[in-house]
Amino acid sequence: MTSSTAIVVRHITHDDIPEWTRTWSTGYLRPHAEETVNFIRDTIIGGRTIGAFEMDRCVGTYRSSPQAITVPGGTVLPACTISKVAVAGTHRRRGLLSRMLRMDMREAVERGEPVAILDAAEYPIYGRFGFGPATSMAWFEIDVHRAGLDRTHTDDTQGVELVTADEYRKLAPGAYERFRVTQSGALRRDSAWWRQATGQKVSPGSPWTEPFYAVHKDSGTGEVDGLLCFTAEETWEAMVPQSPLLIKDLVALSPVAERALLRYAVKVDWVSTVHLPYRAPDTLAPLWLSDPRAARITALSDYLWLRVLDVPRALSARTYGTEGSLVLRIQDAGGPAEGTWLLQGGPDGASCTRTSRTADISMDVRDLGSLYLGDEAPTRLSALGRVEEERTGAMGLADAMFRTARRPWSPRAAQYHQARPS
Ligand SMILES: CC(C)(COP(=O)(O)OP(=O)(O)OC[C@H]1O[C@@H](n2cnc3c(N)ncnc32)[C@H](O)[C@@H]1OP(=O)(O)O)[C@@H](O)C(=O)NCCC(=O)NCCS
Image (cartoon, rainbow, N blue to C red; front, side, top):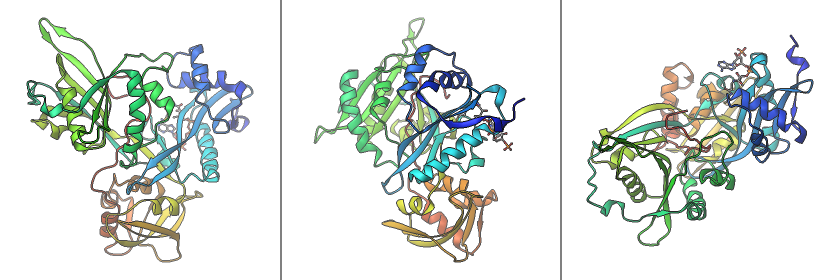
């Protein structure tokens, strides 16, 4: 066996892309297809894509790209986002992911990216690298016949317009841009995202079903303030329609738009079940139904993972639930977040600087990642023995500062086709 030190971890070149793509496809259990190489080539950003090479054979893949995440209070923070992580089955557990990720985290610090984010294939992989689960997702299944919505009434879906894929491509990006700066945890979607969402660019080997598209327009201004994209499958049992409908995207700039679009989907004729995946667990969606128990949560899970790389920049970018001053001791062995930090923050903004004062509370950097967007509470992590109170009363203050009225939400950034959680 070759030792992993004989394996070179480096940025890939143009010529490496076919071999790199094959290794990634195998790691993700996707049969290799020649067209995938060109598809991937378009998504590779020079100087940010890494491979592990044994001689000229690629045995590990890793892609890093620039993203932007909205944090509590509405500031949009640059983020390093990680994807396409795979190590050949023959070379696993020899430290190759660790080498690729540490290289990228060093470079992310040099690039000035204050946080890194990813959606983790498996829970146990990324905590050791300082990532913590930072947003959650709930998957709802709505029993249309229990929902108690009267299909003969159309007042509650006023403002909904069905549009073509072309129209959606024109209208949706602008509305999403206005939405994402209002939603803590939301990520940027670039033009490639919208091309994929509307079938202009389909990932080779992935099944594509042409969706239906709708927008909601504000009754006063006529401006698009909500988006809905769904697929449905015509299904009959004898003379009874039993069609499932999958909501691929539903974002709204107002409760009125959210209610109208959700109710539109639930009232589509012939539909018996609506699948509503990737929502924040505290979404209002069930409460827009006459009987909220018609919406059952069928999966509840961590979703976006976050690692703080620049503590002062990240902590001073968000707002806090109450005015307060806290000294945080962050453990990040050899990492950029290690140290003791003075956070002074409130509803209007915050500052954060390195300090020599005695800590009020201490935690590992991964737990800071979980607290950062407000999805976790210091008291809950303290019950797990992960956040420690060093000064009496500090935990209560930390709870009040880090909490947010609504949980963060990351509307799915990657494309998906499954009718079930992947
Ligand atoms: C996940 C994957 C990339 C890990 O690569 P790797 O090179 O084996 O990882 P490393 O050797 O650097 O592992 C570092 C540590 O993480 C642990 N680890 C890695 N993958 C793990 C997993 N899936 N579950 C639990 N622990 C894992 C290792 O045991 C090791 O622990 P140690 O430091 O205590 O010895 C690889 O297993 C893989 O390609 N899996 C399939 C594709 C995938 O899931 N990709 C991730 C997409 S987000």
